[in-house]
Amino acid sequence: MTDDALSPLMAQPGAHVRAVSDALHGDLLEISMGPHHPSTHGVFRMTVTLDGETVVRLKPVFGYLHRNHEKLGESNSYLGSMPYTDRLDYLSSMTNNWAYALAVEKLLGQPVPERAEYVRIILAELTRLLNHTCLAGFLLQDGGASGTPLMYAFREREKILDLFESLSGSRMMCNYQRFGGCRTDPTPAWLGAARVLADGYGRFLEEYEQLLTGNEILMARTQGVGPLSAALAVSAGVSGPMLRACGVGYDIRKVDAYGLYPRFDFRVPIGADGDTYDRYMVRILEMRESIKILQQALRDIPAGPILDPKAKQRGHRPKPGEAYGRIEGPKGEIGFFLVSDGGASPYRYRVRPPSLINLTILEDMCLGQTIADAVVILGSVDIVLGEVDR
Amino acid sequence: MLGIGLLQGLAVTARNFLGSFHGRSRYVTTEYPEERTQLPEAYRNFPFLVTESPEDPMGTLRCVACQICEKECPPQCIYIVKSRDKKPDATGKMQLYPAVFDIDTAVCMSCQICVEVCPFDAIKMDQVFEIAATDRFSGLLLNRNTLAKPNSYFHSLHPTDAAEVDGRLAAARKAAEEKARAAAAAKAAAAAKPQTPAAQSAQAPKPSPPAA
Image 1 (tube, chains in turn green, yellow):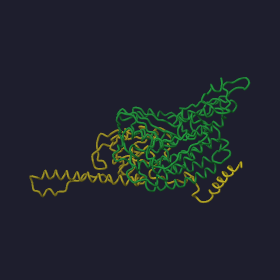
Image 2 (cartoon, chains in turn orange, brown; image 1 turned 45 degrees about the vertical axis):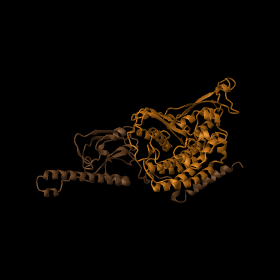
Image 3 (cartoon, chains in turn red, cyan; image 1 turned 120 degrees about the vertical axis):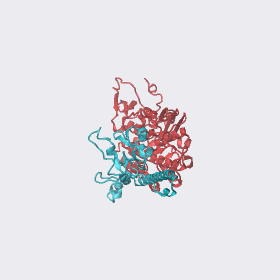
Image 4 (cartoon, chains in turn yellow, green; image 1 turned 45 degrees about the horizontal axis):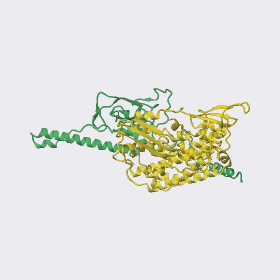
């Protein structure tokens, strides 16, 4: 069997791959990484076939955290599914809430007040900061920098979680968005605290970049590791920073212009090589853009109602039809597809999980790399198993 | 030059390490349980039932067993059995009350939807988080006796919310009293019509308001 026959999508220069054991080279080794391996970010398993240290085959195995999310959505009321969306990608519950609220609002034809749109953008960008900060920490942890970068990242993450907690009552399971706005109105003190955080976050990023970006070990471990071609990324449906690191300028905030994003001045950073280092850098640059959006939103936020006064609080029964609500989550395109038959719960409830779809090209990125690099590549995909398995 | 990036990184860690010896503000951890941080007012964990009087918690539950929370609860952790008799609620109206009100905290995910859908402000979010139990079934299944907490407790947790709820309930109580008084006055007037008009000035009997 030739290399090409093994994986037609693999077009990496210098990738030496053989698929079968033979007398000259010895046996291939098949090992099972996970589901309890700390580098797999939860309960995820990779069945890796190795030639020496080189990965020749990699099968992702998931489903250990399956909780029947989509089927539960078909028996719950529209409101009742909102707290469950927190538990998809539990690092970014605010954006999950928003995507779900957007889908139901489309189904109901429910308008959203301007202040609520601003609050949603503020929370989504805070979530992006939170998620990318965590990713940068975890990626370094996967690369072997045990502790320090992750703890620095978590120190900053805690500040954002404190904001979420004082607004929504919970650090991670926010359950904050409602159909037609948000649940509670942020106080002037909260907005002031958010402003302080947005203004100070750039300083943390500078410190973090001084700590890591120029670090020779990080460069050696990530540059040229796990390259992903733009053509493969697009055809596999990869989205978010993973896609932009390949040089494809596709950001739903720009192309779909949901919410009030067209009012904001920000750029979409894109990478050149599509390797792990680019994925890291794209996220760092995205955080800087998020700070810009936050500062604009906190400056311009208007007064007014946070929740449409005419919006129903419970017992939603949308007219028969279907709606797809999608937003640019920190990990990529998070979308909810709902079909209503006029009943109190959706006829069909489907999630478009960015983590799962970004994970599908894991083998293509890992072939020909060493087993230690496979861990770093998985870290750069940025998965949360709650969302992969649902 | 190779190694500059590493040295820069080491400078950052050295600065953070030495900085941690200067001033409390650099400490980012709390030595729980000796030290405790102040919980934000919005913090929520597990619901409780509001009662008007700490002396008679079961007699003055605000809950009227309408079962909306039971229907809306996403993980379905609430179980309610309606009473057969009625008693006056917070606004003085005769209402049912929950003969059984159980919340399984092993199932509850503290989403606050029961609180949002309650039209009687009877169920509110608690802030308990140290509720480890030795029995995973009966120890985590809370009944109405353990769930009932006085209104003053609600005030101590969520002062802004509680003040708003009290204002709303007081207004509802006043409106109910005025309505009752007007109805009584009209009744008295109708009864007094054949007699002298002086009877109209008689004070209408007030419904007994529940203890605040």
